[in-house]
Length: 246
Image (cartoon, rainbow, N blue to C red):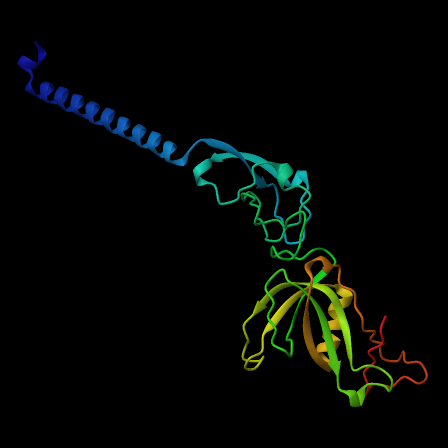
Protein backbone atom coordinates (compact mmCIF):
# COMPACT_ATOMS: atom_id res chain seq x y z
CA UNK A 1 0.00 0.00 0.00
CA UNK A 2 0.96 3.62 -0.50
CA UNK A 3 0.82 4.49 3.24
CA UNK A 4 3.18 1.57 4.05
CA UNK A 5 5.84 3.10 1.86
CA UNK A 6 4.99 6.79 2.45
CA UNK A 7 4.42 7.94 6.10
CA UNK A 8 4.12 11.49 4.88
CA UNK A 9 1.20 10.60 2.64
CA UNK A 10 -0.48 8.88 5.58
CA UNK A 11 -0.08 11.99 7.73
CA UNK A 12 -1.55 14.16 4.96
CA UNK A 13 -4.51 11.81 4.59
CA UNK A 14 -5.19 11.85 8.32
CA UNK A 15 -4.95 15.66 8.38
CA UNK A 16 -7.34 16.04 5.47
CA UNK A 17 -9.81 13.67 7.12
CA UNK A 18 -9.68 15.59 10.39
CA UNK A 19 -10.12 18.91 8.55
CA UNK A 20 -13.15 17.53 6.74
CA UNK A 21 -14.65 16.28 9.99
CA UNK A 22 -14.07 19.65 11.69
CA UNK A 23 -15.56 21.55 8.74
CA UNK A 24 -18.59 19.26 8.72
CA UNK A 25 -19.08 19.71 12.46
CA UNK A 26 -18.68 23.50 12.16
CA UNK A 27 -21.19 23.68 9.32
CA UNK A 28 -23.64 21.57 11.28
CA UNK A 29 -23.20 23.83 14.32
CA UNK A 30 -23.73 26.98 12.22
CA UNK A 31 -26.83 25.48 10.65
CA UNK A 32 -28.17 24.54 14.08
CA UNK A 33 -27.55 28.08 15.33
CA UNK A 34 -29.36 29.52 12.31
CA UNK A 35 -32.35 27.27 12.96
CA UNK A 36 -32.33 28.27 16.63
CA UNK A 37 -32.26 31.96 15.72
CA UNK A 38 -35.09 31.46 13.27
CA UNK A 39 -37.14 29.77 15.97
CA UNK A 40 -36.36 32.62 18.38
CA UNK A 41 -37.34 35.24 15.78
CA UNK A 42 -40.68 33.57 15.11
CA UNK A 43 -42.41 33.12 11.79
CA UNK A 44 -42.12 35.54 8.90
CA UNK A 45 -45.08 37.91 8.51
CA UNK A 46 -46.00 40.81 6.27
CA UNK A 47 -45.41 44.30 7.63
CA UNK A 48 -45.80 47.81 6.22
CA UNK A 49 -42.76 50.00 5.52
CA UNK A 50 -42.50 53.55 4.20
CA UNK A 51 -41.87 53.79 0.46
CA UNK A 52 -40.54 57.33 0.96
CA UNK A 53 -39.80 59.74 3.79
CA UNK A 54 -43.07 60.67 5.53
CA UNK A 55 -42.81 64.03 7.35
CA UNK A 56 -45.21 65.21 10.03
CA UNK A 57 -48.58 66.27 8.67
CA UNK A 58 -48.51 63.96 5.65
CA UNK A 59 -51.78 62.23 4.85
CA UNK A 60 -50.61 58.71 4.05
CA UNK A 61 -51.51 57.33 0.62
CA UNK A 62 -51.36 53.73 -0.49
CA UNK A 63 -48.47 54.62 -2.84
CA UNK A 64 -46.46 55.80 0.20
CA UNK A 65 -46.38 52.26 1.58
CA UNK A 66 -44.75 48.94 0.73
CA UNK A 67 -45.22 45.47 2.17
CA UNK A 68 -42.18 43.48 3.32
CA UNK A 69 -41.67 40.24 5.21
CA UNK A 70 -39.99 40.30 8.62
CA UNK A 71 -39.59 37.91 11.52
CA UNK A 72 -42.55 38.46 13.82
CA UNK A 73 -40.67 38.57 17.10
CA UNK A 74 -38.26 41.21 15.78
CA UNK A 75 -40.97 43.68 14.84
CA UNK A 76 -41.31 46.94 16.83
CA UNK A 77 -44.38 47.32 19.05
CA UNK A 78 -47.61 48.19 17.22
CA UNK A 79 -46.16 47.52 13.76
CA UNK A 80 -48.77 48.05 11.04
CA UNK A 81 -49.48 44.81 9.16
CA UNK A 82 -51.78 46.07 6.40
CA UNK A 83 -51.52 49.21 4.22
CA UNK A 84 -55.26 49.77 4.76
CA UNK A 85 -54.55 50.36 8.47
CA UNK A 86 -52.27 53.32 7.70
CA UNK A 87 -53.64 54.77 4.47
CA UNK A 88 -55.68 57.92 4.99
CA UNK A 89 -54.20 58.66 8.41
CA UNK A 90 -52.00 61.66 9.23
CA UNK A 91 -48.34 61.26 10.19
CA UNK A 92 -47.70 62.49 13.74
CA UNK A 93 -44.10 61.21 14.00
CA UNK A 94 -41.74 61.29 10.98
CA UNK A 95 -41.01 57.98 9.24
CA UNK A 96 -37.86 57.45 7.15
CA UNK A 97 -37.97 55.58 3.86
CA UNK A 98 -37.67 51.85 4.41
CA UNK A 99 -38.62 52.04 8.10
CA UNK A 100 -41.41 49.94 9.54
CA UNK A 101 -44.58 51.96 10.08
CA UNK A 102 -46.21 51.62 13.50
CA UNK A 103 -49.50 52.88 14.85
CA UNK A 104 -47.48 55.36 16.91
CA UNK A 105 -46.33 57.08 13.73
CA UNK A 106 -49.84 58.01 12.60
CA UNK A 107 -52.67 59.81 14.35
CA UNK A 108 -55.91 57.93 15.06
CA UNK A 109 -58.66 58.27 12.48
CA UNK A 110 -60.99 59.64 15.15
CA UNK A 111 -59.06 62.09 17.33
CA UNK A 112 -60.26 63.39 20.67
CA UNK A 113 -57.06 65.04 21.88
CA UNK A 114 -56.96 62.68 24.84
CA UNK A 115 -54.89 60.28 22.76
CA UNK A 116 -52.17 62.89 22.25
CA UNK A 117 -53.30 63.87 18.75
CA UNK A 118 -55.17 67.15 18.42
CA UNK A 119 -58.06 66.98 15.91
CA UNK A 120 -57.90 69.09 12.76
CA UNK A 121 -59.22 72.60 13.36
CA UNK A 122 -58.67 72.38 17.13
CA UNK A 123 -55.93 73.60 19.45
CA UNK A 124 -54.59 72.53 22.84
CA UNK A 125 -54.32 75.64 25.04
CA UNK A 126 -52.77 75.82 28.50
CA UNK A 127 -54.34 78.26 30.96
CA UNK A 128 -53.76 78.95 34.64
CA UNK A 129 -57.08 79.13 36.48
CA UNK A 130 -57.10 81.59 39.35
CA UNK A 131 -59.02 79.14 41.56
CA UNK A 132 -56.38 76.38 41.24
CA UNK A 133 -58.91 73.82 40.01
CA UNK A 134 -57.20 70.84 38.35
CA UNK A 135 -59.86 68.66 36.67
CA UNK A 136 -58.83 65.19 35.45
CA UNK A 137 -58.29 64.49 31.74
CA UNK A 138 -61.60 64.02 29.98
CA UNK A 139 -63.52 66.32 32.31
CA UNK A 140 -65.80 68.94 30.76
CA UNK A 141 -65.53 72.55 31.91
CA UNK A 142 -66.78 76.05 31.21
CA UNK A 143 -64.20 78.82 31.24
CA UNK A 144 -65.18 82.12 32.88
CA UNK A 145 -63.17 85.32 33.08
CA UNK A 146 -63.60 88.20 35.48
CA UNK A 147 -62.34 91.62 34.43
CA UNK A 148 -61.51 94.53 36.68
CA UNK A 149 -64.87 96.35 37.10
CA UNK A 150 -63.08 99.68 36.79
CA UNK A 151 -62.19 98.98 33.16
CA UNK A 152 -65.49 97.35 32.13
CA UNK A 153 -67.95 99.64 30.30
CA UNK A 154 -70.93 100.71 32.36
CA UNK A 155 -73.81 98.27 32.23
CA UNK A 156 -71.70 95.25 31.30
CA UNK A 157 -71.04 92.36 33.71
CA UNK A 158 -67.40 91.98 34.74
CA UNK A 159 -67.66 88.17 34.59
CA UNK A 160 -68.52 86.40 31.35
CA UNK A 161 -68.25 82.88 29.94
CA UNK A 162 -65.44 82.50 27.44
CA UNK A 163 -65.89 78.85 26.42
CA UNK A 164 -68.58 76.28 27.20
CA UNK A 165 -68.16 72.51 27.24
CA UNK A 166 -64.39 72.39 26.72
CA UNK A 167 -62.65 69.04 27.23
CA UNK A 168 -59.69 68.89 29.62
CA UNK A 169 -56.64 67.22 28.08
CA UNK A 170 -54.30 67.50 31.06
CA UNK A 171 -53.58 69.29 34.31
CA UNK A 172 -49.92 69.81 35.15
CA UNK A 173 -48.02 70.89 38.20
CA UNK A 174 -46.98 74.46 38.80
CA UNK A 175 -43.82 75.76 37.16
CA UNK A 176 -41.45 78.38 38.52
CA UNK A 177 -43.08 81.01 36.32
CA UNK A 178 -46.58 80.04 37.46
CA UNK A 179 -45.96 80.77 41.11
CA UNK A 180 -46.84 78.72 44.21
CA UNK A 181 -50.15 76.86 44.19
CA UNK A 182 -50.91 77.60 40.54
CA UNK A 183 -51.92 74.73 38.27
CA UNK A 184 -51.82 74.69 34.48
CA UNK A 185 -54.79 73.13 32.70
CA UNK A 186 -54.69 72.17 29.01
CA UNK A 187 -58.00 72.51 27.18
CA UNK A 188 -59.10 71.38 23.73
CA UNK A 189 -60.63 74.36 21.94
CA UNK A 190 -61.16 75.57 18.40
CA UNK A 191 -58.85 78.09 16.75
CA UNK A 192 -61.08 81.08 17.48
CA UNK A 193 -61.58 80.09 21.12
CA UNK A 194 -57.81 79.80 21.55
CA UNK A 195 -57.46 83.47 20.64
CA UNK A 196 -60.30 84.42 22.97
CA UNK A 197 -58.70 82.51 25.83
CA UNK A 198 -55.39 84.29 25.25
CA UNK A 199 -57.18 87.63 25.44
CA UNK A 200 -59.09 86.61 28.56
CA UNK A 201 -56.06 85.34 30.46
CA UNK A 202 -54.10 88.46 29.59
CA UNK A 203 -56.82 90.83 30.83
CA UNK A 204 -58.70 89.08 33.63
CA UNK A 205 -58.88 86.29 36.19
CA UNK A 206 -59.82 82.91 34.73
CA UNK A 207 -62.06 80.46 36.60
CA UNK A 208 -63.07 76.93 35.64
CA UNK A 209 -66.50 75.48 36.31
CA UNK A 210 -67.07 71.74 36.00
CA UNK A 211 -69.87 70.88 33.58
CA UNK A 212 -71.82 67.64 32.99
CA UNK A 213 -70.09 65.31 30.50
CA UNK A 214 -73.15 65.27 28.23
CA UNK A 215 -72.66 69.01 27.71
CA UNK A 216 -69.29 68.53 26.03
CA UNK A 217 -69.45 70.20 22.65
CA UNK A 218 -67.29 71.99 20.14
CA UNK A 219 -66.08 75.10 22.02
CA UNK A 220 -67.84 78.36 21.25
CA UNK A 221 -66.21 81.65 22.10
CA UNK A 222 -68.25 84.13 24.08
CA UNK A 223 -66.01 87.21 24.04
CA UNK A 224 -65.65 89.48 21.04
CA UNK A 225 -62.27 91.12 20.73
CA UNK A 226 -62.41 94.01 18.28
CA UNK A 227 -59.16 94.53 16.36
CA UNK A 228 -57.34 97.80 16.78
CA UNK A 229 -58.66 100.53 14.50
CA UNK A 230 -62.09 98.90 14.28
CA UNK A 231 -63.88 100.62 17.17
CA UNK A 232 -67.29 102.12 16.54
CA UNK A 233 -68.34 105.42 18.10
CA UNK A 234 -68.74 105.07 21.84
CA UNK A 235 -66.31 102.14 22.15
CA UNK A 236 -64.30 102.41 25.40
CA UNK A 237 -60.97 102.43 23.51
CA UNK A 238 -57.68 100.55 24.03
CA UNK A 239 -57.59 101.14 27.79
CA UNK A 240 -60.83 99.21 28.29
CA UNK A 241 -61.95 95.63 27.74
CA UNK A 242 -65.20 94.79 26.01
CA UNK A 243 -66.75 91.50 27.12
CA UNK A 244 -69.57 91.69 24.57
CA UNK A 245 -71.49 88.43 24.28
CA UNK A 246 -71.75 86.91 20.83
